[in-house]
Length: 354
Image 1 (cartoon, rainbow, N blue to C red):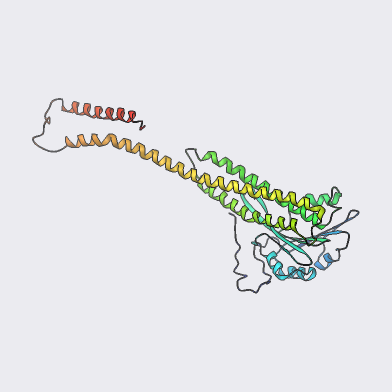
Image 2 (image 1 turned 45 degrees about the horizontal axis):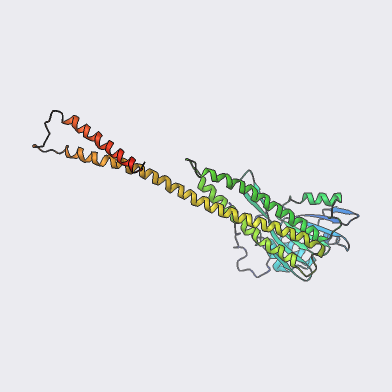
């Protein structure tokens, strides 16, 4: 099930800016990857140290530095020293439960958000935090594990197709954000199809485990909402940014990205309402079935009350009892019983009680 907060015991009592990894260690050792390019050339490398990464950065080119693995606090500390990143921002990057946010300094812009996938095998959402550090000539991305959704962007850069090689680091940032948001929509669609199929099961006679599934998907939708709604604030900030990190001719791409994020957020709201309605219908269906059962039991009891009364009267042990020794008393007793039942049936039918 989706986890909304990390265990923060390790960070309790620490001074602001203390670099403590809050989350699960997902790879054994960090991995560095670099794509350094301009319109005419491309260099790819996997340097051993961050100092070597720094040497790739140059004017009139873009350097994409990708760091896989967040658990090495010393490396993150070194990253802050080399690129002049404040300790509080580094602390946020190491907290994998951090709310999506955007922050600016005079030298750079930091974006922290979640990459979310739906695991078909376990049938649950899995998330990974990604941090982006943007400057005019470079973009640094920090991820929790090796492997991501950005291979198609790397291929486009390698082939030199489209605008990627002609644009600056802000356009590369847009491409990554666009991929993340597209994946939000894909996962919302997957969950939405599951939620819509559950609706028809509510009215089936057997509903084994249905309430558990509804609650599970309600939690997952809430998790999506928690991590996607702040992205609207991030994109708005990027569009309205006046610090020069985003070029004016790229704003149209971020405006289009804003439409996608809003669409994702609105779709989540729709599925939240749908799940709430399903829970209400489920409980109403249970109440309706319980009422039907009580109705049947009440009708049966209505038949047996007069029959029990007559049988009880003639079952009393008095010596002097009318019709006690009557020759056809037993036959008349059953005729009376059948007449009472038929009379009640006719009465109930006229009242349309069944």
